[in-house]
Every structure is written in C-alpha cells, then in structure tokens.
Image 1 (cartoon, rainbow, N blue to C red):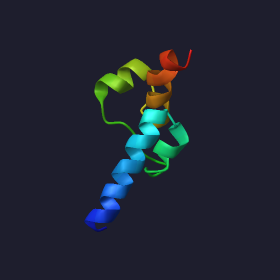
Image 2 (tube, rainbow, N blue to C red):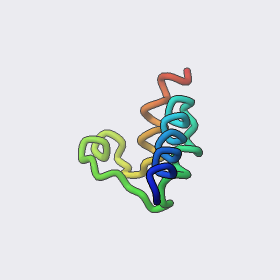
Image 3 (cartoon, helix red, strand yellow):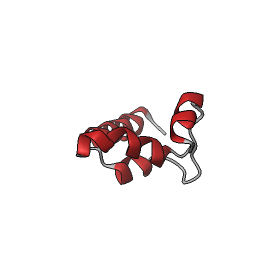
Image 4 (cartoon, rainbow, N blue to C red):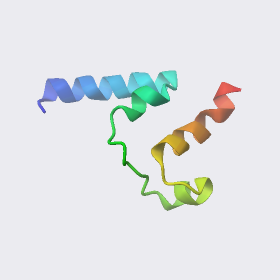
Length: 62
C-alpha cells in the first residue's frame, strides 16, 4: 500500500468513526478481529471489536 492509499484509508476510518458508522469502521478490519485490551474484554465480556464500539457509542445514540 502506498502513502496516498494509506492516508485515504485512515481518512475514511476517521470519518466513519465520527459518524458512529459501525459497519463502515468494521469494513477496515478482518471479520475475525479481536480486541487485545484486557480492560475492554473485562468490561464487555466479549473481545469483539463490534461489541466495543456498540457499547462505547450507546450513550451517544440515546
């Protein structure tokens, strides 16, 4: 991947994050991605990245 493509991917990820667009964010990762944060896993009981973002944004969507 060249620098231009890497910057475009990073920009797309940040835009998706700012929109709280879970599907767009997850499109940047392999389906099998898992968090390696012990705190996140302890709090969520689930190492899935989807669970992490869904729980983190829940108060913002209410």
